[in-house]
Image (cartoon, rainbow, N blue to C red):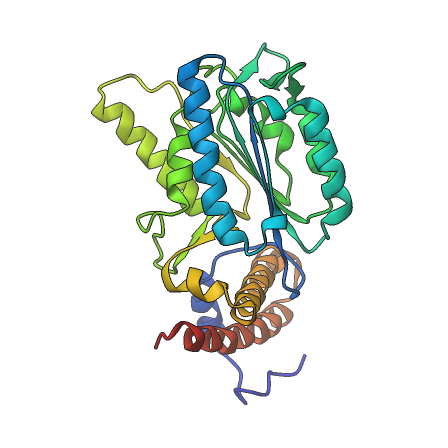
Length: 314
């Protein structure tokens, strides 16, 4: 493969390795701008305290998601009495038709979950929906990058069942045996608009950053209350470090401009290609690996310069 013309020279292998180490890993093979479809599902609270807690979480989460989605039609919310099994299945039936393979899907589950030793269930009006049925619905959506965040009690029961090479799964509990209502949901919602969660100061919040923030805040909550922790979260999936969920500050303002938003989408796609190369490295010849990596890194650097100009950054 020929060296990329803009630089007129080859990057050294050491330089490639340094740049690679600084970039988040994302598994995608396309450079097209993708859309992220958001689904918020919240079941029944069962008593006034939890009904209000879950309703407030849905309201806050919907607000930040709509602000970041850039298109109201990409945000789908089912909560409380409206979150019936039929409504959930109808929604995923529409997503199956509307979502393209190059799109992304982010599903956030709030409320109560249960586990009887065999099946996980999300507590909703009417017959509860099982983890097995939800997996079928997730699998039916053609988005090649998916994130499912299950903040309910007993959520850890479905991690192994739901995770795939292309699907990140975050759960508030490590197993189905942790059945107490969780604090994880509250802090996950907070993370999506928190500068503290933006640990790399990129003015964007990834799934990994949101998870790390929520995990840390849950631990702090139990320690400050001097209580034994009844939840221990888990995150599975190599995509988490580069699955962008929210933007902050100038990045959020710039994303309101369709042209700049497209540049950001192209950057994320290029970062995904770097991630794909990292995963394929062991099966590639060394020369081919560095040739392909060099080409992507050069394009990524040029694109980042355009984004910096749009954001007014040096």
